[in-house]
Image (cartoon, rainbow, N blue to C red; front, side, top):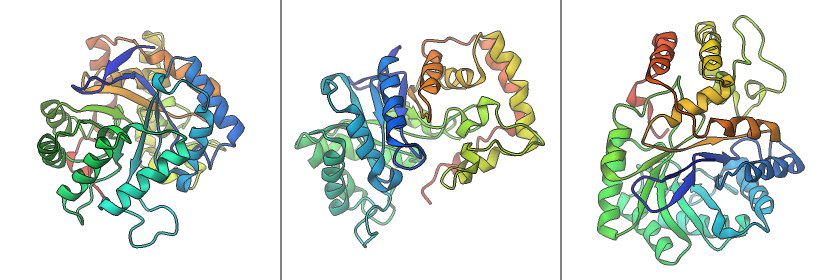
Length: 328
């Protein structure tokens, strides 16, 4: 496993992070989830990402139990706040002070830790003054409940505004967690330049495009049983790529992956890590062997000629519109 600094901060993270969106607490039984976490630890992963909303708080609890007994100082634990949890009362969502503080305290209990390494705003809240949001995060940092602050799926303008307030409050604002893959490149033109300017690194999710970049979805064929596309929580995300024109291009990537000596999934993860502003790529898993395979993408260098061939193959099926980085 290789390691990188998260933005311009002093925090080091593993190039591959383990995330439990969708799987833990819902799609995968706890015994299997724990086995996946153990496989991640065995593979050298030190960075673990979750959120209070995943499986309506159950994912945090599963991760907390799975990591129990590990040396806390050897781990980087990240979680997020924004989406509604619990009974969905008027203050059970968003980035108001009440919800942030209460959610942070609840997340720490579920994760069985006194602090998280990075506490992230899961989306941008247009209904709350950004000053209130950043002040609540600053209080958590000063209390020692969060060491650093990050965001997820914020636009370049939102990142710039947040960074200005963070400097004023003297809060370590260090990361953004966007979707990023060979097929989804909406952060490249605006978000990454803004992040580089403000000292944020990317911890990207869905580097294999919800499984599409494994090559298991075939053009003209029904989706495989038990795949993400058959799961109620996952099919809305993967559906955008289940078109024959996309799936045909993905199949054309296989010889390029073979040229690099990688599986298609490893190839996809390695591709996002070629971007110097990407500090870590989040992988999920429903089986331990998926973790063991995908971590092999760490440390891989893809030559420019190979990157050019990828672009030529995917060409007009790549999504690049920066306006698609948005809060619903």
